[in-house]
Length: 264
Image 1 (spheres, rainbow, N blue to C red):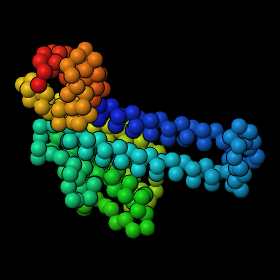
Image 2: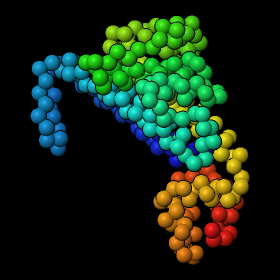
Image 3: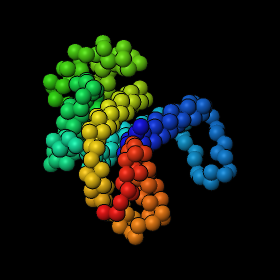
Image 4: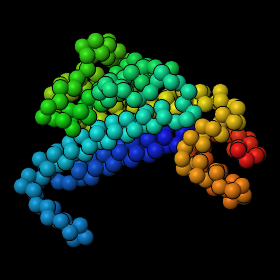
């Protein structure tokens, strides 16, 4: 079972991967030179002087956009999951005065099952995002220790992540070169890490069994509170259960039913 936060993250990032792959295929089908007839229904002006250069530029734009989109979705996921009322790990949260890439590294490093190399690769994606967004001023980079650590694990990473070349990726990052291989691999690793965070979240919330505690946590949400504090009725119960199903689908049927055993 996924948290609502993870479902939104996977939907957004999954669409990003599908989109950049679709764009890459569509661009590959364009000829390198010659005339291309623009479909009339697009109603746009497109007459590149060099089709090959336009293809390279457009693919680069799509890959850069995917980096930014994936990183922003990761920031939102980590922030929202740590604000979930059933997140019991008070020392692990996304609220901080440090930069977001640092926050991602600190957060993921506390989650069981996430390796150090996965954490650093997620940090690398975040730094890449900063380089793209703040291209004129960004000095985002991995620490020398983290770079060395990745290099020390490059054979394992190469075998585990479909021939992802650490040396090449670090060189691409240094020189501002964007590739589909780097983009898709790093985004895939963020998905792996988000799933591990969600797994840890579920292990925590499963410890909360007192129905009054659960009811109190839910009532802290103003949207649920407005529904639940209506006059007791089948309508109130139906609306409340629907809201819980959308936002907390992992709560058991027993808990959902017990929530309405009596009016608070």
